[in-house]
Image 1 (cartoon, helix red, strand yellow):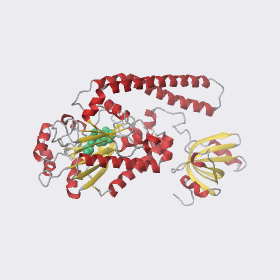
Image 2 (cartoon, helix red, strand yellow; image 1 turned 90 degrees about the horizontal axis):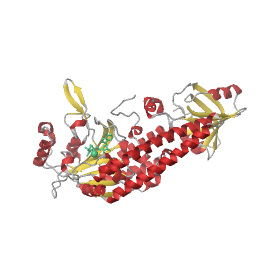
Image 3 (tube, protein in one colour; image 1 turned 30 degrees about the horizontal axis):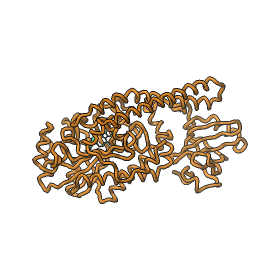
Image 4 (cartoon, helix red, strand yellow; image 1 turned 90 degrees about the vertical axis):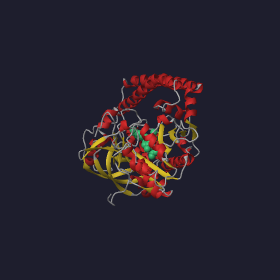
Length: 502
Ligand code: 4AD
Ligand code: MG
């Protein structure tokens, strides 16, 4: 940015001085002889107050008619004002319209999600998307910082791969000069080879899964960071994971508190994210799911949903009544926006009321041996106020590379980390099978072709050591930290099964 412009995040250094901001008109409101223009410049929002008589009359009129998202520069005096967004406002003395915009398609009346995704190239300018983008930036910086400061070496693993790392059904196939290759589902297998060279390594990149589920937790392209460590056991991995997640949560709290507040994140809950996290074995989790306490917990939840439904319906009726009155345009707009939010909330509450008995039945019918389903994870995660590790899953439900527990060969030495408040799995990890023969059996047992894993098996032939690692999904982590319900909001340009919008 040009030196002649001051950025909104630096206004506190310019109190009572004249500055020029360069940005876009986020929102404008006129009230007789005063206009309130909210300007955004990429670093924040600032209210600019234009008084008739303080700027030339023709400029006052032009600004009054200026459309949302027009670009402009605004000059004025910086005043501290607690009521203003950002704590400062600008008393405008001059402005220069750079490119006027008319009929900006996204209006303050909220739109459906489909419309917003189709307009993601513009919706990225919304304050919510901006806050999420800023948090994502911090999170990624914190992830790298943590591993770089703890003796890990970054290894970039390939995107084109020749063998499945996770379930084969979710592989995306691409035509690689006439032969099939796949887009990577995980960097783990390659990373294991690098761990035998560097000891502690991590990879961080986009990951692809042809997930056929249209849930709020699934993207087909998502970002995953994966550490891999030589000479580590399951306890060591859990400790690494809880220190890591506590560190990144603390960094986001430190750097992005105002964005978290704007997004309505549960800040006191985030302040509790410190080791140790809860630890459950899969078998204990299964007992919880089928236990009486869970049924009681779900019944209480159902009662809460019903209360909420009643309250939301009452507020909707109240606003609909108000709408019939004689209101100014901005008051009408405000009510319309609140109604759209409330109706979305009501639809969601109705879905929860509908799903609650189904989830209760799934939990009650849970049998040892099955993988935890999405609703099972949600329940366990809702019953805890900090992340929970679930360890020692049944071997039959898990990937071939997970090490069989030598004390109980029905289970593997793995873990999932479930984020609290119903957000569910954010990390999956395990100790890796380091015995050549056992691994070979597991590969064959899962109908995989040992030829494809020849190099991976080699790692067990030449100086095999106990080792393990995990993968953290960036978008799911952001959804949890910000309280955003759907992970499609946690990446700038989401890719989902049903549609790729832009
Ligand atoms: O549990 P997953 O499948 O584990 C692995 O891929 C291991 N190979 C990682 C390792 O041990 N190095 O995926 C890890 C995490 C999940 O916990 C979740 O946060 C995220 O990746 N994830 C997804 N995020 C968004 N959309 C999807 N379709 C995801 N699938 C997994
Ligand atoms: Mg998993």
